[in-house]
Length: 77
Image (cartoon, rainbow, N blue to C red; front, side):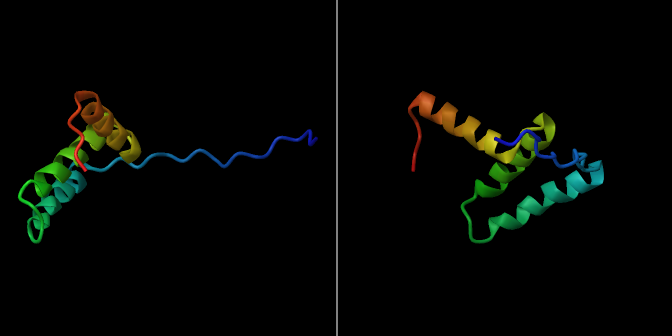
């Protein structure tokens, strides 16, 4: 059994978007109107705001939505 522990990678500093960068990202959701259902741009805008405002990772947000829908019995595939 090895006695030495593996070296961990150095900690990465998270990148925080500036107000201007966030504005550009949110405005970019409007191009999703082409070829998608009408609610798609609002859905992505809401998701971006949730991720940015809460600090959640995408997987955490998706599990949250899935868990809430399953709990309500309204999950649609």
